Length: 181
Image (tube, rainbow, N blue to C red; front, side, top):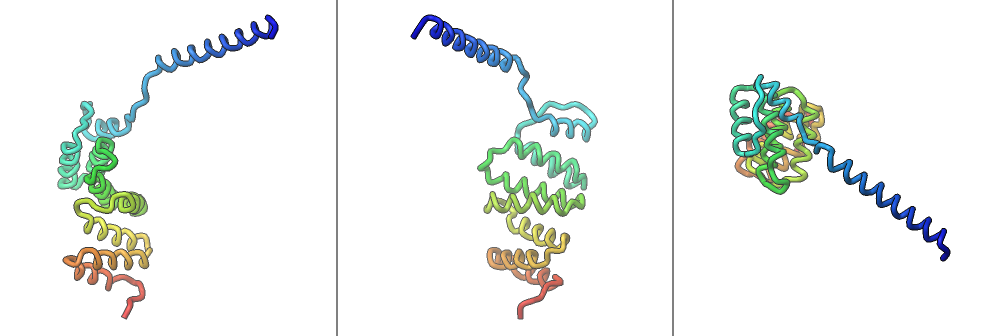
C-alpha cells in the first residue's frame, strides 16, 4: 500500500470519526421529548397547573371520583394518566382500559370504546370486573349494529360467568338476531 492510499484511508477514517462525534454532541444537547398531552388535558380540566402525579392508585381514585360526578371527560383523562403509569403486565391495567372504554361509551363514542375494549380483552384476559367488561362489549356491539357479535358475547358470559347467565340470556333475547331454538 503506498503512502497516498494510506493517507486517504486515514483522512476518511478521521472524517467519519469527526462526524460521529459531532452527532453525539448534538444529540446530547437536545431536550428529551416527553408526553405532555395528559398534563395539558389535566390543566385544562382543572383550570390550574399541577405537578405530574405518577401514583396509579391515586390516579384511579381521581378517575372514579370524576365518574361519580358524571364527568366522563375528566374520568377518561385520569384513566389515561393511570395507564401511562402502570406496568404493561399489571392486571389492574386491564381494569383501567375497561373503565376508559366505559367513559367513551358514556360520551357516545361507541366505535372508540369498542376498539379500546376489544384490544383490552385480547391483551388482558383476567382482571377485576371482566364480566362487566363483557357486558359492555355486548352493549357496544348492539349500539354499532353488530348483533351477531353481541349474541356471541352474551354466550361467552353465559359460559364463563354462570352467576350472570340469566342476565345475559335476558339481554340476548332482546337482540334482533335470529335466536336458536
